[in-house]
Image (tube, rainbow, N blue to C red; front, side):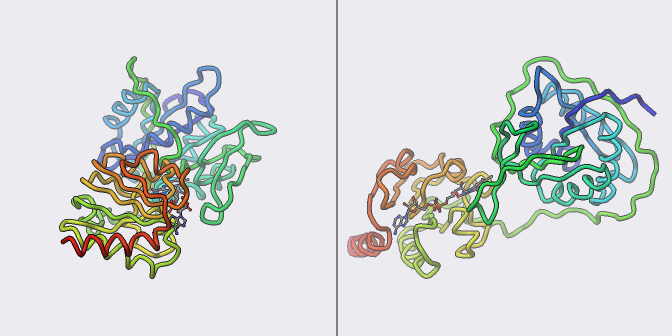
Length: 328
Ligand SMILES: Cc1cc2nc3c(=O)[nH]c(=O)nc-3n(C[C@H](O)[C@H](O)[C@H](O)COP(=O)(O)OP(=O)(O)OC[C@H]3O[C@@H](n4cnc5c(N)ncnc54)[C@H](O)[C@@H]3O)c2cc1C
């Protein structure tokens, strides 16, 4: 067995077909926010033959990378990955294991915590000083509450909520060392049959020249009729929503704009009843012209708007549509 260097923080690299995915940045950023006194987290890269990906990750982040290889780890299902990661966490003496907040790692995290004898804190959005070490913040009840959690059993398995952490700085120094680790030819007890890209991810949204986006301020699903009416005035237009608008089922999640949704850059972006949280703005800041309708004159959306309408969207939209229809 290769000697595994001791690291108290392990960050997992997300791979697809040997490519390092951008979701890795969330896990690395969370790991770096836990590192004290210049300590370097160890990257964990799992696969049938993950050396090249480990070299790439070590170069991208300037951190050492453990490349854990074994036939069973190519496209492995959650339990096999969890077992391999628990072993790696034990070998390197990890106290914190940071995973990207993707569905794949959401599948791995609880099992990994059990096999490693630690605890699991999913969807971490921030790190603060706690009573006996770091405290982690996460949303509860659909974002209505913020919960602070401290780990009491170690290693603590954390998943980083997508988009919650500023991306790690670009590495301009040397690449980290790659440490090969053999997982052997242990059989996988479940086999992944592969992954398919979804084909229904709102193709119209990214191509639309005009996006009419609705937020919680629209009040109810039936009020979206006025937004649809506005969108229908333009060719190549599409309806989109903030996360709450999609979470409430007013629109499918494929229509969500923001860090955890789609990124759009239309010629015209119409934001109706959207506050302008940075997670939403991140997905629309490339829009060429932004019109925002919000009844709160201090709403942050006005900071990115070219035209701001301080008005009740439910009264404004019908009047505006009427005028546009007359002029058309
Ligand atoms: C990790 C993470 C990822 C996230 N990803 C996303 C994402 O991808 N996309 C996203 O959108 N959000 C995302 N969020 C949620 C984000 O932080 C905000 O909570 C969300 O964008 C707020 O949505 P909203 O503006 O529709 O609702 P609210 O914040 O509730 O704002 C509603 C707005 O409507 C206004 N309003 C109310 N009534 C009216 C009316 N009658 N007429 C006009 N205006 C009215 C109010 O003044 C208010 O400004 C994420 C959050 C986290 C923590």
